[in-house]
Image 1 (cartoon, rainbow, N blue to C red):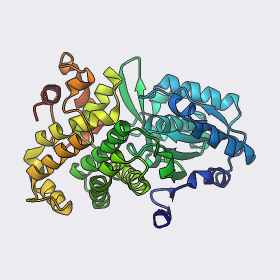
Image 2: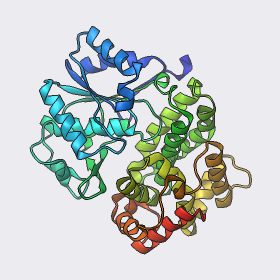
Image 3: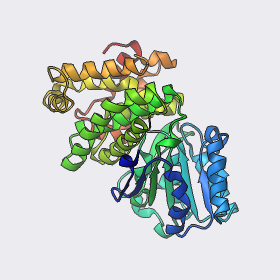
Image 4: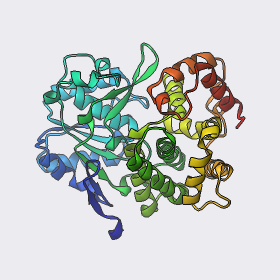
Length: 387
């Protein structure tokens, strides 16, 4: 694994390699943290990893404690509880450990500890981000234990408004963690099903960023290479969770996806955000199921772009059909369900889903500006399994 060790400074300070989680103390000290709050989820909090990391911090002089009241789709209630724990423990920074939920919650907590306005005042709408008191924000060290959301290199958090049953994006440029540790040894215990779902989420970020209409060639290039990494390494990571090269490359692909999607997302995420709020379903699994349906719905404007992508991936007879077939085969290979009914989601709320999806910020990046009715139709197709 020596050849997969690296230090990067894009889009933030990133430490890559097996065993590098032990550098968390040095990262905290670089950020003048003496008492970081370790934010994670209940599942991880119960595992030896969290205790080991906590003991490592404490034995090296950091006054750390754990906060783990984080749902799979984190809510404003979770964030408020984290802020209270931060203040009660007199903490001065955050170590966010886990999948996208814990990372998003950790970043949101670090934002909100210094704010007087409610979290929804900083929703990613217009210039809301300028309301943030940046001096009150706490520094963050992000350590992902899944390869999917790429939240460790993101400038926002997706938080569920439970009252209105809608996911909202909370944004500020300074929410980007100052230090990131990509350590594949922390992902080897992830079950095959979650490895597949989170890996497909990384693919969805890269693919939607690539298909978005905004002019951003750098993000487009990052997205293309991220897709190639998923193609080469997701099946390996699912088949053998101890494959450290595959785990490393998937962590990198995940970070690349989140770096690329500043170019935009699309209908996959617009619908997935809506379904996550309504049904509390796993975000990566939703994106994985929706992927071929959204591709097909956008086909009329994506033929040329997808053909270029298929050539880069070295697919036989490269074109839209070849790429769509690759997606379908990959999903079967890693045991992703074919339709939303597998998640006990039916079409009874199709009109609600359509309206929510059309309003979702991710919809703005879709190659075609779908109406609420078109989103409802797309959702019904994904429920019925009609690609």
